[in-house]
Image (cartoon, rainbow, N blue to C red; front, side, top):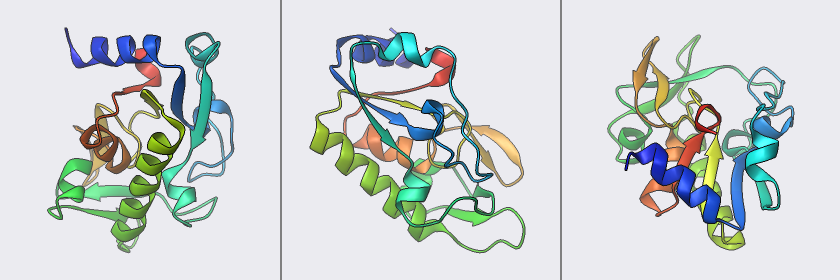
Length: 160
């Protein structure tokens, strides 16, 4: 079974699901917009939904300057081997991204989430791809990696 299959099975079994707030239409993305996912309503029907935006939760504000990872994916950020930096100017936002990831893990535990549906390609929530050093790479965002380390299966809106 692939990791996507594992995530879909965990989603099917879960009564409570952590979801990137932007996928639910909350205007919390870096550009001040939401990105409602077409398949989310059907996939989440009958489940308790816990909306989360790790970046807004960490106090970065909305809108905010776009951030990408540098030196590796979100797992590498969690290990201290990579950084989260603003695309223009390179201001370091690593501390806020790590704090936001911790808040996401705490929310998943507090509410008993058995799975998470997250925004693909986000530096926080990407599940399979993220922006790193100006290009898309295979890997997870900072929060997605932290949730996986915490035992929470994650999948993206692309996998619904």
